[in-house]
Each structure stands twice: as C-alpha cells, then as structure tokens.
Length: 317
Ligand code: TXA
Ligand code: MG
Image (tube, rainbow, N blue to C red; front, side):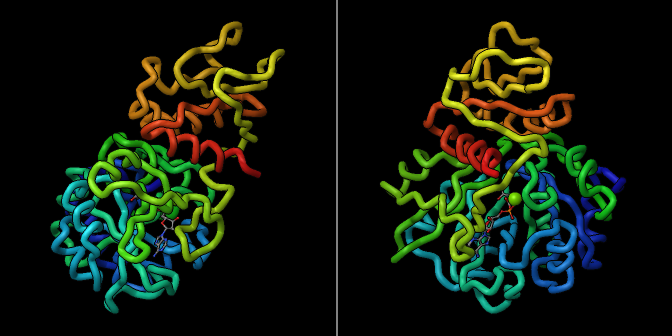
C-alpha cells in the first residue's frame, strides 16, 4: 500500500525527485509525474500499463502558465479557458518544444487543463513544472474517484497518494480541440456540451473517433468493470433475474429485486449527482458476488451524454 496523506510538501518532494504521486482532482484521481521529465513520464506509462500511443494531459494552476507550454491560443479556446478554468475542461493546443514528445505521443498538440481542486491547485502553484497525469487506474479499468480506489489498484506501485477526498464531478474532463479555430468535442466529460455552447455557439461532436490516436485515445472498450456489463434502454431490463446480477439504475429502483443488488445514480434524476456516483457504484457492483452487471441508459441531456458514453464503453467487449 502507498502512503496516503494530505501533505503537499511530501507530494512535492517526491515529484521533484521524478517519482509518481496520485493526485486528487475534481473529475477523477490522476497518476502524476513531472511532465518535463522523460523518465517520470515513462514511468507513468509503465505503472498504468498504458500503450505509448495514448497521450497524456498536463495540469497546471493558471492560464498564464498554460501559455508557457502552448504556441497558439485560438480566440474561442481563450474564451473557454477564461470561463471554465479551473474546471473539468481540457483543451488540445499546439505544443511548444519544451513539452516532451513522450507526453503527446509524438502529436503536435498537447492536452492541457487547470483542475479545480484546492489541495491540488496549492501543490501546482509550488511546482516549477506542470504535471502529466492520466486517470490513476490500470489501463482500461474504471477511473478512481477517491484515494481508496487508487490504493486498491496502484498502491503497490506509487510513492504517495495525496488524499483530497471524493472527486466531486466524478467523470473525466471534457476534451475540446480546434479545427480551423472552431471547437470540436473529442471526449464528452464533466463539462456539459450545453455549457460550452453557451460561450462559443454550436460545437461539433466527434467523441467516437475510436482508436485513432490523432483524436483523443477514445478506445471503444474502456472504463470497464471486470464483470461483463450489459446496457439497456431506460426502464427496459429483461425479466426473470436472480441473485447473480447487479443493477445500476438511474432514478428508480427495480421492483422485486433485493436492494443490495441495486445502485441508484440519483433518486431525484440529477445528472450531476449521477455523474458523481457513476464510477464508484460501478466499482461497488463489480465487487458484489454477482456474475454480471446490468445498467440502463440515462436521459441524453447535460452530463447524461457523458454518462451514457462511459456506460457504452464499459459495455463494449
Ligand atoms: O479529468 C481528466 O481529464 C483526468 C484527470 C486526472 O485530469 N485525466 C484523464 O486522463 O482522464 P486520461 O489519460 O485518462 O485521458 C486523457 C485522454 C486520453 O484519451 C488521451 O488520448 C487524450 O486525453 N489526449 C491526451 N493528449 C492528447 C493529444 N495531444 N491529442 C489528442 N488526445 C489527447
Ligand atoms: Mg483514463
């Protein structure tokens, strides 16, 4: 097990030495290392068992610092950054040379974000480099939303887990790139498309670029529990189930099925609450003594788009 604590000085010390630290963010926990240090970045790929063609997001604490790492900032990118940073928004922008090719898997763009978590922002302020950080889960598994999740899966392999409590948003950041300076959403996430469109007008959605590494590494099968997960339209589950099935429901419990086999995303149908609970509940269902998990789609509005996207990928085999 890794040492867990909320001491940013300890975290800083490990990171300055090129070692890895798990960090809390408002979306999910990250596995962080010095983004400007090739050997730290390499160990991130190793520890996660992540293919080198899947690039990493860099994190820092201000727009001014981000500008040190990117060579161009289209007008609409700037508007989004000003409005939503710190927050669950990642921008794909042309990188400056200082960013190692390892971070971007050789691509010209680097993914950047200013996360909204007080403890992490304090740490980032003190560091003389940005942090490269993918979600702190073994490649392909459900992302962690608390320190215990990280410890259970990667605890043996990292020096320190900075414990900042539960991730409030609960799903990864929304990734926005630019084509001819116009915004394109490459990954649905914790910032709703409607909120983005309020600032920059209609945006193109390209979240299913599958394994094309030019687009974010949105592999078809990802975010998956170990038990097989089957996805159903809302309210339409097959009849005649037994105790071998765990259920993830949106806002209503299923009648006739023991509550211990059910997790409800949000009783009031609140999408933010649903997103917050999604990964933690999938993990809980995965650890029950069941053989399969059944989940229903949620309404396709607000963060519901991102929730359905994650369920879809968790179900793909
Ligand atoms: O909320 C988040 O974004 C979390 C927290 C820790 O910040 N991080 C996260 O990282 O979800 P990760 O590595 O699990 O997912 C990052 C996604 C990957 O699908 C990757 O392919 C894509 O971002 N990506 C990173 N750099 C890219 C680039 N230069 N061009 C295109 N896609 C990129
Ligand atoms: Mg991930």
